[in-house]
Length: 367
Ligand code: T4K
Image 1 (tube, rainbow, N blue to C red):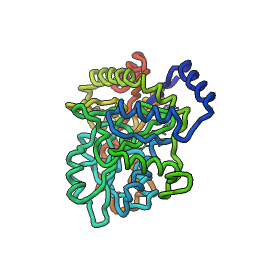
Image 2 (image 1 turned 90 degrees about the vertical axis):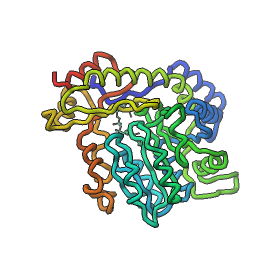
Image 3 (image 1 turned 135 degrees about the vertical axis):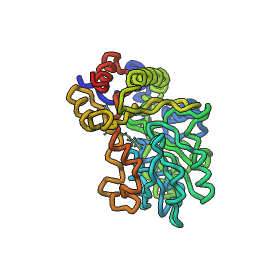
Image 4 (image 1 turned 60 degrees about the horizontal axis):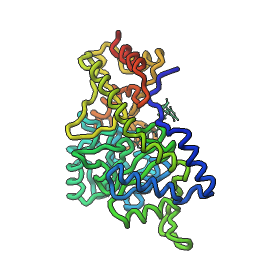
């Protein structure tokens, strides 16, 4: 059996069957049912945020956030992410403007944002990549100075806190992905976090075609409602997520202990004051020092049954839809290119066995 980059956290099957029985009996299977309501409330409490609106995946809340905030023109964003981030800007008829990343975090470099602002800029869409918090204070200062909206793609940042406060409270809105490959999953799923009840109401309309009531549609909404089955699954997984994050933490500790000091391999350490979720474990290969290219290591791992992933290579700015944009040039994005060309995400999940972990370590450390 190959060792995959991740493995989904699954609820207890008997408990899930019990909840399925309740759903069958109720015959209420989607459209803001009781499990949907319960999961939204439970997530508010767990995540320490005031309002959560559930979605069917992590892409549609991005699309909906831009629409709800009436974002137009240009949106400043990072090329170092999953392609859904930029697609959401494109789907709203806006132009993505790529800004380079800070090599210390992988996140958009606040020092480079102002130079990318034009009279057409209306919003910034940063990503807490791998769950590492962006410099939200600096980004907000810039947004306030120029009157811009800030929508955080927090797909990787479930449960991440800075000095005891949820990172999801930053900006105008934050979005989450609950895809199977994430720390916390509802199979497919996602959510938006917002600050006030009025915005939550509007978002709830927009994810239900824009319906405010039976006869009134308040905007060109979409259908992105989470159903009762996934909501029930999500409630059960919420009970297990802390244990899963702690198991991931132990994996990170072992990786760091074993890989620190290997010439040509670097990785991120924990940031002070941050509760991390250990959603990914990216390592960066310096081929000169390591004596092997990133791809040579990637394929060597693969031949040995270890399926690491090159998240996020290629950069979004290299895909055909985006590479013609003025901000997509290699010269504009040197740090992002360097990171994308050197990264491998090692397998990281709650159920990784210690013998699997040691096998991965022995390949990377070339023993
Ligand atoms: N913004 C950001 C920053 C994101 O990273 C993402 C998604 C989004 C927005 C959009 O959120 P969603 O609309 O997806 O909710 C995966 C995920 O599909 C995607 O959710 C994720 N980011 C992205 C980084 O990774 P793939 O194509 O690499 O996944 P896949 O199918 O190759 O799976 C990887 C490994 O996971 C497999 O080798 C084995 C394991 N796996 C996967 C699945 C689906 C399982 O063990 N069981 C499973 O059911 O994209």
